[in-house]
Length: 254
Image (cartoon, rainbow, N blue to C red; front, side, top):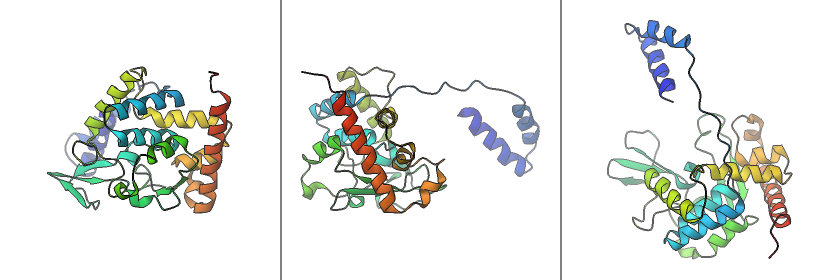
């Protein structure tokens, strides 16, 4: 990441005709740097259930909801918890705290039929791929919803009970580690791996690749950005149903 940022800065300097930038950039283009190995961690439904229980025990029920959404709706962390950004960022926000403001999902994006619609932050300025998810076939999410009274479903979707504001990224990261440790989840598993775990479960369950791509809002599936809500919604339902059936089939006997 550091090398990428440096190359970008040098490209900008080259365009501005700043002395030395073109020469240094040409040197970097001849060099090869080792890339980090792709991640292979994919937490299971049982592990996510234990992490949710740990979050509840620690008094953070909405963190448990976030874990459920990341796993069952295959959403990126920032598309669930939102992001604190500098005030100078041009993106609009109605929530300001100190020198930063927050952008992210709100309860208003979930309608009365529990349909969740959002444009992922990663593709908002590129493919604009839109995600439409029926949350009713997501048992973990529905379990969490059952403990949230309708009158409390206002404002940002996920908030820290200590501050009543959306989680700061560093706090959410550290809190996940506490929950994961309490749940007996490997220290190699990061919070963002919950999305990978959900996609892995869907593929193991035999859900069609196109349906999984639509549900996850993959940027490299550009055609999914042009699909109508109804088609995307049915894809999400098929993915959820296939995963539930797979989970029940592989449930250990008691």
